[in-house]
Image (tube, rainbow, N blue to C red; front, top):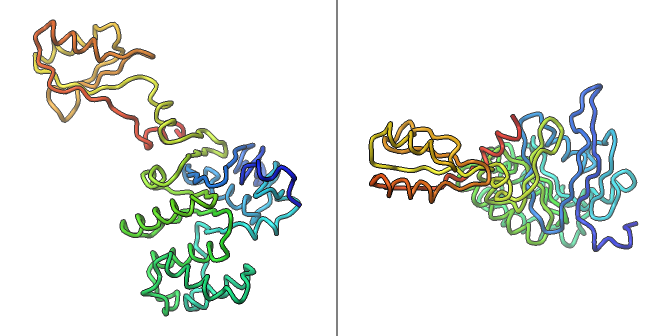
Length: 316
């Protein structure tokens, strides 16, 4: 049974989760939660523990230690109840390739307990939502990888689950298909709880409300993309284009009290990358310096830390 305070709980709660293979810890004492209606991106290098964590949340794999609660049900006590409420697309999309799309989705609806009178409407609904209309009469082995991925998404959603776990959902899709699936996931996130992993960081940033980064089995970052970039940036970095003698300009910039480091940009003459000292801004000092020396300040632009930079910083 669900606890009495279920409505006030997170949709997914992971507490001190650990998975060992012999002496190796694939997942090492991680904890996080996901709120109802939240889309969370789960990032990490290959072998970091993403897929293992997802398999444990779906009750496909038992943890060595720790607790998982999904929609109020404890994984150790009610795995079947959790499976009813989760739609799962594994990294290696398992399909019965000798079946026709419609037959396969009807089969998935049946094993997921969709009432018989609703099966046809659910199947045709998923065919529409996942963009399978033009291919719907084909066998799965006649489909491209991108369309097979769509069939995998359709089976994950066929029973209208409250939680979706999607491991590399845009794998093998072309750019147009990626945009379509991204929009679909964002729409689903208005009603469902979604965890998705991806190596396409721009897609995660565009799709997800929050990002978790795992490395060597441990959670190393947790927050919105903006929060993670701000945390990683730490010190202000600006690109400036100053018209003047290069040696004198660089020396003068380096001598400013608010500046920690100055480098000339490699491919743009007259441009300098200026890193401010911690908790300081050098923009006003740079402007005043140019006025004092009668140099033309042609451009001054703040450099924003990219999600790729954050990823590299926390996983190296």
